[in-house]
Length: 394
Image 1 (cartoon, rainbow, N blue to C red):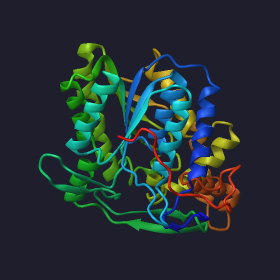
Image 2: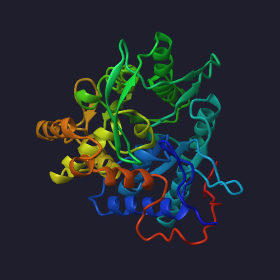
Image 3: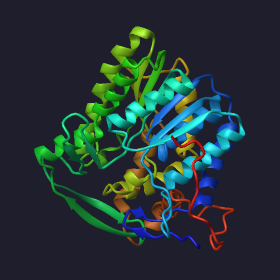
Image 4: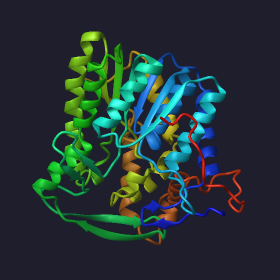
């Protein structure tokens, strides 16, 4: 079939297998062109098929020669429906790992469930013995609690009062005002339950209790803080409340892991185009302006570049984290000169000036790249089989 992008709002409902594979190969090529990393040996990535989770798995495997397990919730192709991008990404990664003699397995299912945790533990016992790095990179709008059975849904809203600011339809370039009503107390509670640290803590506790977490193991989860313009819907909004919970979890986990020489961190990453960030009002416009400024200053990093810096400069170096167990690899984004220029442009951005002041073209390209489209070297008019197997699917 001829596979073309089909969008619905901030979601692309199709994905291209060869385009996704090419994106994965580009990330692998970047990592292999860098200085080899020291450690880890066996890595578990929970939320491994896209974005920072995928880049973490690639960095560990092809930068340090690590064996990797990826846990993710993605769907294979069915009839005329393509597989999800994460499925194609993971299939490409496993092919490349096998070619280079690296062990890798993929587990597809609900990472919040005890069933998937148990399945992962059994796999580690059978094939890996123990893991010495656990990356937690789950991005989901819903979670069913494995003990109570309650299903929670997250929301992206301010807390306390409504918030109004500019936003952009990144498909059309139209800049408009948006107003987001504040969350209720129950919406805050549910967002924390989905996006906070409880499930991360459950993963580490169960891995440790099963004896499959190595002495000196490191675990890291991902977060974002951002500039003042996004604080009402991010840092100070429902997501921010969940991230506070995530940071508290890091402190608690660090206390547990330190007994065996291990550490728990939260890495505060740069704003990048992801399916999750595309859904947050105001954020796509901010990222578009940020891209233009950081590219002009030769400071722009994509996902794989961020993850290499995380591994090489923080997780496996003496640089480590700050006193709150936060690793700030958003440091270039938050530089004073960068933010001053972004805010100057922000004030002037309208529909008729966005192409001049922001990098909406780059934003769109990164968005479609997420799904394997607009990738150099791929023939999108070619007849393509959407059915792709993941080599070591458990």
